[in-house]
Image 1 (tube, helix red, strand yellow):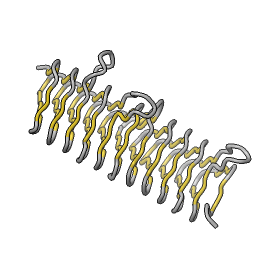
Image 2 (spheres, rainbow, N blue to C red):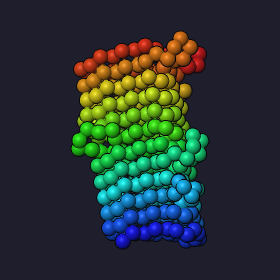
Image 3 (cartoon, rainbow, N blue to C red):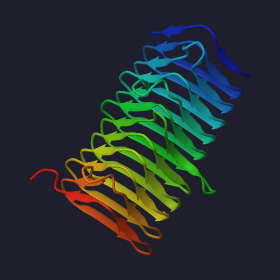
Length: 273
C-alpha cells in the first residue's frame, strides 16, 4: 500500500521505508543521523510538497531512492551531509525540481548517482557535490530525450561529471561546472547539445555514435583538453560574438567525425601563455 509522511520524522538511526505496490509521498521533513532508504516496487516516490514548502529529506550518511516501476520526483530537497545520494528507476523517470536558481535541490558531500533503465532524467534544480562525482545514466530502447538539463538545473560537481545515454539526446540549457573531468556520451543513436556555459578544470569529452554535437555557448577547460567526436554525424561549434570564445582549452582541442561535417565558428587554445 501507499506510504504518506504527514508528520516530521527525526531519528538518530537509519530510516527505511519500503512498499511493494504503492506510492511513497514525503509531505513533511525527514531527518536521519545515519541513512535514509525509500523503496517502491511498483509506484512513485515523491519528495516534498511545493505548497507547504516541507518534505525535505536529510541524512548524515547515504540517501537511497529506488523504484522498480514508477517515477521519482524530487520536489523539495534531498541532502547527504557526509555521504552519497542515489536515485534509481528501472522503468520510469527521475525529475529534480527547481527551488530557485541558487537553492540546491539535491546535495551530497560524496557522490550523486542517478540512473533510469527505461526513462528520462529531467534536471530542473541545482544539483551539487562537495567532494564527489555526479553521474547521470539513462537508457532507452527507443530514441528519446534521455537527459534534459533546463530551467534552474545547474550541475556543480566537486570531481568528475558524467552524462551517459543509450538511444537518446543530452540537452543542456543551464550552467554546468565540473571540478575535474566532464564526460557526455551517447551510445547508439542520439545528439548532444549545449546552450549554456560548461566549465571544467580537467578534460571535456563529448562522444556520440550516430548523431550531432552542437555547442552554442561557451565550453571551457581551464587546465585540460577538449575532445569532441561523432562517428556518424556532424559537429557544430557556434560563435558567441567577437569577445566571447565558444570553445576554450589550455591544452588541446580535438574534433573528429568519420562520416559527417565539422563547422567551426570560434575556438581558442592555450588559456594561459
